Image (cartoon, rainbow, N blue to C red):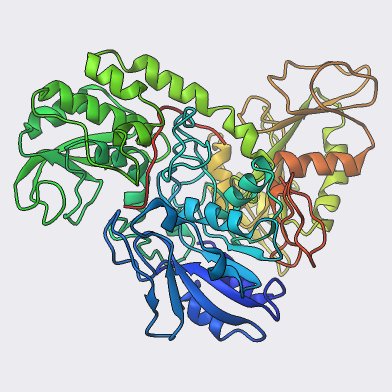
Length: 592
């Protein structure tokens, strides 16, 4: 299990962004340290920091208000500090007032996001950033892991559909953290903002929340678990209909239905679609509040069979389509105002009126799902420069090429340079032929020659284990034996889907290498593949770091996080900044 720490923990270790400043804090009950201390309490006890005001997003500072319930400003009883609500009765109440910031010198944002465009906390953050832009106010984001990883799904909103469930065009499932989104907003909106992001320590985009060792505190009343967050990008779409999305039950967004649905037929129709990574079980439930409160509903329970292939947004679109086809006379779209907007909620969630129009006409969703998938792909390049975390640990980069092309010579020059950057490096040598890897006649060699299925040689300085069986998948090898490494350099494995650097030497035959990410050559080379000179060891090491995604990593707090197109943090040395994607459809909304 990794020892991850929230951004607030990193900030408390080095308080330079807040030293000597009067600060305001935007937070709620999810704002806690890795040990569970509320952020407001930790900052109040911090030396040379004066916390003078609290701000609460949707659901309020304590997180108890239901969705779309206006919250009044008040006094925070445990601290005696004033609490300014950033979610009131009108759209104007979403923006911080000038007088609320007038006597402050920094704003800290520490709220857990769930990785969906319609969860409104990131838009509260954006509005607060805009209120700080062009002023002396520093904006500090205490970052937190994205609980549903880095996958991207769903097209950005169409022109005219930027609302409080999506104030900036991004995919439904954006695959970024709040801190990374803050960097994106500064860059793409060209904000003059003194932004500091305190990054999560010890986290990669592929790390499951259960492996971080961090506590999950429900960021809103109907977001009780990480499993809820995973289905939310799709099942939140049901808020735009008269289907119950499971509010008022112990499994919100995981159970859904209506009094007029035939649950077994509904589940059967959904399973017939063979949607990736998911199965549907017939289910009956009685919501205690919200839609159909007190009435037994028939529908389905969602069961995730493969988190990696599951596409929540596509699934949500298909669920709505199936419900309407089964009960066209009973199914209706939501008509009440939604997040201060009177247009159909489903249009605000999906980012246009296209989905609603297709469903009403009884059309085929396939083209719309394909459009959402393809339209999300360019976001990968848009976000790249703003990412802070590697995709996985360990990252793997392969050096491939012909026999005697110099792959090993390159690796032995690159490894010490990577170590000098503070990285823990592993190496793997792959061969298509079996070979003796011990000294003949030595005890350890004789043990295995006698027929042992595995053999180990242990000294005070090292442990070597040799296993004798069919070729092991590289993925399994890296997970078992290299999890402590930041990056693993692989020699060979030219056909595996990992970033590959082709090594080319004059007079050495070249095997076919599919889509190399870079090339090392001792002679001139043309083409679009980035090519480095053989002997440019520092340049090659830098390329490995980039391909591994490790150039995204910022030193905690002390380096700041300057943003492309934005202002570097005052008092922080300049640092390099680093890039999103996925399938299917889109949405828009607020915390559940």
